[in-house]
Image (cartoon, rainbow over all chains, first blue to last red; front, top):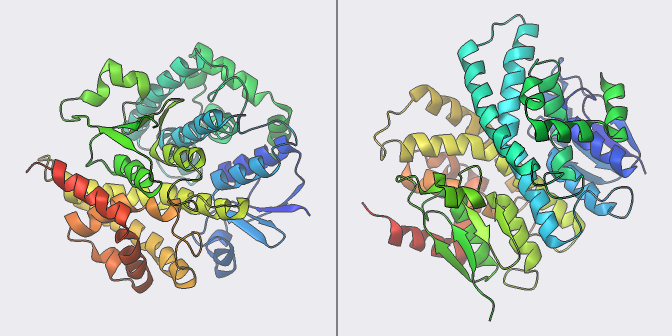
Length: 213
Length: 221
């Protein structure tokens, strides 16, 4: 049974799920949802994902939304297939959850709003707010300083191995470093940069990047 | 007897209460070590060692030091599966997936606008900070849209993730409690039939009543 992933291969949240499925060697089919046309706000889509967001998966009769819930589910279901993305002990798993939450609550909004200001608004012919961009950048610098500290003691966020915690950062950081022109945030930090190189060189991520961009 | 686990942070903090509610549901003994955030306790070097982002709560037991309230709750459920409410985080992968889904929905969709409203309406006045009417209106609209989704869901399901109370419902208690009890906008929850019914059920749990008592004891006028 092939997992259907509803969303766009270019959108950050579906990418989080696709990266996980690729790492775990789980077959999937992308069902395009045209965000520009507002397909995600139409009644048929709202039956699948009531908040009108992507991604949502369908695996036979099983449906699930929220990318970080989806990756937790598949990482657990296929724990013995492909790399173990959850840690080996309860304590390691707790650290994976901790850094997943950090990404969700301390980094994601800053990254998303920077991309909105620097990439999406200009594409729509709207002006970005320079003061806001500066403010967001400063806050993100402060957050990444803490990542620098962490990654100077630990190869990956949750420990010695690549886990969901690292994977979850890939989509937003890629957008920040490429389209948003904020690569310096990563490259100026020795350990964050080394970590980024490692995680973004993984075959699964490279495969996804080639599908998407 | 096991050493009580430690939770660091003030009892009035919503994120701290999320963890305390979970520990009470799971019947896990804990010690709450309060912090004076007005005095900057959470930004001092000793605290930054256990929570480098300078936020509350932080958690310690014999095996681990952790932060992020929702991560702490998941760990408590997984580390003490046989204690207290055994089904709080589900007893099989599908149940757990549904709970994770609604826990994420809480964190991504319910938390931002409800936190903003709690800050503007309940906390800013206490801290002598001027309220921002624009921010209030914007977040009321955002929260209303989210609660429309909840209203539909809770018409089909007794609790968010299914038939049983779970971590997903629990995670909403702190912000919802403030909205209903410390602001004049509580009807955003209570005026919706299904959300109101759900709020009544979850806020009446013994564990939550204990959290509210704990807050009352600590609150100094």
